[in-house]
Amino acid sequence: MISSDEAIRLEDQYGAHNYHPLPVVLAKGKGVHVWDPEGNQYYDFLSAYSAVNQGHAHPAINKALIEQAETLSLTSRAFYNNVLGDYEKYITEYFGFDKVLPMNTGAEGVETAIKICRKWAYEKKGIPEEKAVILVAENNFHGRTTTIISFSNDPDAKKNFGPYTPGFRKVRYNDLNDLQKALQEENVAGFLVEPIQGEAGVVVPDNNYISKAAELCREAGVLFIADEIQTGIGRTGSILAVCGNCTCEIKCERQNTYTKPDMLILGKALSGGVYPVSAVLADKEVMDVIKPGQHGSTYGGNPLACKVAMAALNVIYDENLPQNARKLGMLFREEMQQLVDSHELFVKVRGKGLLNAVIINDTEDSDTAWRFCVALKDNGLLAKPTHGNIIRFAPPLVISEEQLLDCISIIRKTLEEFRK
Ligand SMILES: *Cc1c(COP(=O)(O)O)cnc(C)c1O
Image (tube, rainbow, N blue to C red; front, side, top):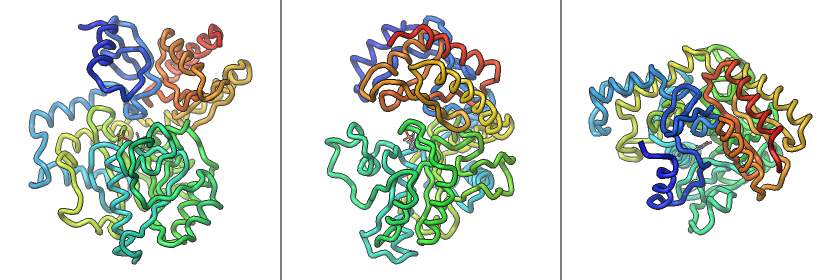
């Protein structure tokens, strides 16, 4: 096996420099742990941006992958396959929608939702052609395609990638007045929003923001589109972040804290990190605007993806991962709050379930959070800064209380040793 130094040198020389990774090379993963080529063990506190909610190398998901790979992996949608329909029934019942459109990556899911929303606007709402406007939130993150970065306000994501796709208008996140004003403008077709802004630094809106925003959209005849690619599939302590504070069983009669989006976008943990699988869910009135030939993807809905996604969703349900995320998330924030109260370096902890962040006492352009993450790595825990001075902590949801307490002592020890 090549060494860490060699692996880093190769990536540096032959790969595009579109990422700035922490200097650690991963060679193996199991559950909440990953190992480098030299055999050092780490807790994974990023979970591939919440794709690995079910833990690394989950046996049930890998079994589904291997069995289906040996049977049939890809047919394209030129033909029917004997797994897709079963998956479509499974996932629509699981999340309570009439229909699903299967894609691969998260960004493709978002692109799909944008296309459906626009088509719905012209054909059902009667907006004049080419005039549809989709509202988005400031500081959003929805992916990296040309259309999606057109409505980003992160200069790194956007600058020199123009000309940009028109038809989007930003509103302030967590500001119902701003949304209400924007909804009164002409030709608004949809509102695309993250229930918690992950990449922006785990920004949790007010308790009623999502439900009220959906209500305002409904009153205005505008589609409410939830991007749950990062927040969904158990991460925030319920199966979806739009479930609010409901802790009920997954296949539930939704309780009154649940806000049903007109479109729901899923990705990342939909496959438990073994294969790119994304999906857009909606009811018939919306989804049926898409007709043959109008949208698709060669790999979308392939039998391998379908089997993997069913296994990954089963694990969430079987192992009560939303409940575990909720319980251990509260413990984590309590413990981090003690560190905030007793150490200058930690300014604030926030989050929901096991999607949390700590704000570091320094400016956004400082390297303090980066150096703290390197120190955490040296002590056996992997996390990464987002937006300079914010560190996201998001372990796989299969983490046990004992393991979490071990991680908290690593964070405490690192904090006590750290010199800014
Ligand atoms: C990661 C992410 C995406 C993009 O997913 P990719 O699979 O990287 O294209 C979109 N929206 C949110 C909220 C995300 O966290």
